Amino acid sequence: MPALRITGMLVVACLVSPGLAAANDGAVSLPQTMQAAAIDRAGGPEVITLHTLPVPKPAADEVVIAVDTAGVAIWDAHLRRHPQSITHSAFPLVLGTDGAGTVAAMGAKVKRFKVGDQVYSYSWDNPHGGFYAEYVAVPAERVGHIPQGLSLRQAGAIATTGLTAIQGIDDALHLKAGDTLIIHGASGGVGTLALQFAKLRGAKVLATASGEDGLAFVKGLGADAAVDGRHGDIAAAAHAFAPQGVDAVLALAGGETLERCLDAVRPGGHVAFPYGVEPEPRSRPGLPIIRYNAIPGIEEFQRLNRAIEAAKLKVPIEAEFPLAQADKAQERVEGGHILGKITLRIR
Image (cartoon, rainbow, N blue to C red; front, side):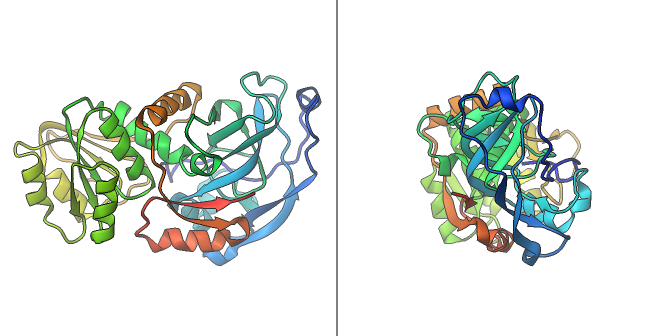
């Protein structure tokens, strides 16, 4: 989950890189223009409209991706309402921090990919523009090959959420076999993946979700126990799950219900949450609270791929919208109670 406070990202650039010609030898020429969902001012979902924009050209260390599927997330809506929170906020501003597609062109220094490779990418600070577009140019180090077992549609939903989930489980909480974990907000885009990665590491998971449909959903993904995070008795559920207290909490939603989850942590336990969770968990004596941010990189994508393949990851996608309905997709995200992820189908 990207940091909503971090600056930097998202405006289409059309400068031709000196390394492009050599990189495109033997490749199909890129079109000059593309369709993109962009904003010309801050506001509600209605400010997102289709634009015809220049296809971005890669610098020497960048890859151009012909986008098949883009993820839609609450941080996209935040940027739509607060474009001033990023550095590269000139209009028209193309939204979207992640997606999947095929490599269409490369800069001269890029060696890990070839034209036609299926890839996925998370790039928050991306001056060329976002993923709500037919093409996006991103630094090659922020791109990973799609792992075995995933389609472009599935991979397009999980670059940001997958990195957030695996880095929370492994790097922030250091979960190991036999640990007990509460995932608060387990039915969302990050939570559905974190649940599966925690089970892959051998942890026992108490998942919070809302509604009977949410509880059944997280149990179907492997949760050992589940409790309604809005109306259930979290204290009783946590005590039944781990009478001596849970080892860790991964907080993917804030508020008073999160504080009740923290009450269930044993002495010496840990709490982690990604940037963007609000309100943030309140500090408590003797309870380390770790705030972290998803980091894209070559090794990070390789580790994520190994976990995806080992877990035989399920990627729940609740709804898919065409590019021309990016406004409707963001309306759905802001409506809440999403079981899995919302995506844009670009092609």
